[in-house]
Image (cartoon, rainbow, N blue to C red; front, side, top):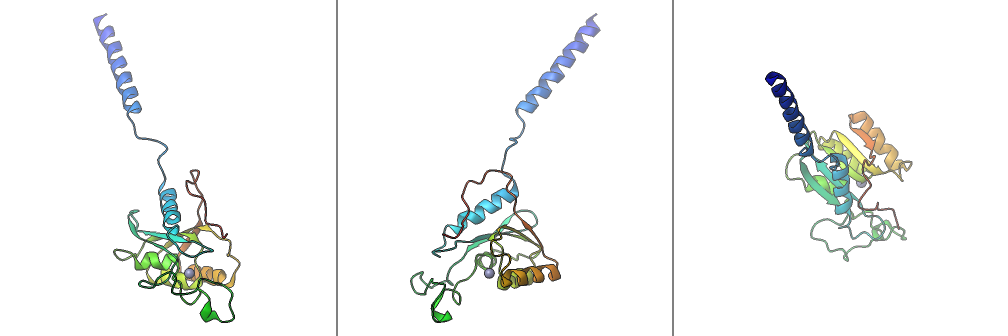
Length: 186
Ligand code: ZN
């Protein structure tokens, strides 16, 4: 009789402890790494002074430690009002194109150590010039959000470079409702 009582009590204690542990368990709806880094890329994009397209990028290592962040803009030391931001002018020299540094390259330039073997999160699929920089710096994976220029020649060339160099790329799929809206061209 006594044995049965203690056996039952033991069951109750185990049940209670299990329940208690479950109640004190970890939060379940935390941000995934993918969502976290893409949100960070979107956030840093808001630093951009570019009037039409604000892009951001975050480079992380294989342990998901952030190495660098960047957004599109002029090189260091050049003020935002010292060069043009236009797209179509009589001469290329009067457009933004010769002067802006793209977000993914700035993220690499801003990295606090080697990005070899890392991943890059980009709000926009990279151009061929950035693709070359990504490859040459040893980044092995790209996660991009927006691919609206995917059929442009520079994107086709970028894909070709990534394929040949063995850099994996995939479109970002949010697992959470995004907190910041995307940076569609205005
Ligand atoms: Zn680029």
